[in-house]
Image (cartoon, rainbow, N blue to C red; front, side, top):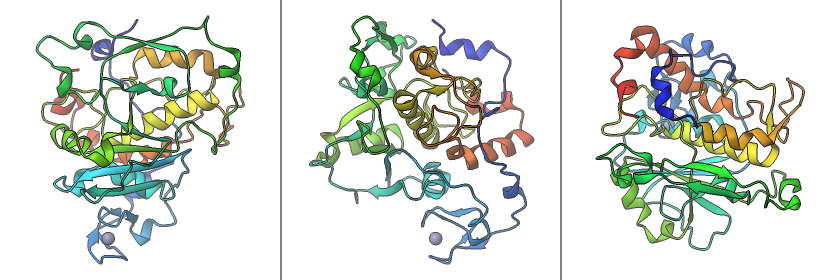
Length: 323
Ligand SMILES: [Zn+2]
């Protein structure tokens, strides 16, 4: 089984190659700053307070729909302009809401809502879909000595699917946007310490928690003390809806957008039995995954390209973080 550490020794590949991300060169043509039509403040591409694009980009940006609702809870001390959470709200406005803690919804009565957060009882996405997956947890969760799992946002786990016991009905259930096992997913956009404070809030504490597959972050901004698989919020949302989609509707065998994303081998093993032959241009919303949500990374990829134009990848401290 391949380990994310191996990624370090491979020559670097462009992470977003073959992803279905719209041409973002239009962003490079936007000069100067523009006034937000809601708050009148001066902004570049979008207003990170109002979560809308500047008017010049309103008609030029790609928009996408998601299979479920996403709530993002950000800590009031987080600096808005530095967060990638707002990318999701700008690009998928009908499906993403951002709340500033402590002004958040009360989830205590909500069913079908999950919180993306590691805890002792966390489920994985395949488990939400009742796939017969067992977690294989190494000593110390596979972390290097001296690391404590409690300091990480994500457990390092390998999942093994137990195929022989899988009831036929489970694999044949047909999902639609309307009957997924989860209706809403909540993400916490803050530092690890702040997120633990939010998790302790009684309005959030009762939610079922979900962990994502490990994937190396491509974020160029150094997050102190966090390993490279501590994803930026927009990467985590992309990873989550990708996993949901693959478990519900499979993966298009022609889609090559995941090749350089540095997702743990366990993901690919779980996706293998769900891979389907489908037309290479089929991006219908309930067709096998073929990049339907890749535009979540529209601003992220643009900023990544910009940073890498000016700095050598290996000089950026962010990519030299421990894995
Ligand atoms: Zn505004």
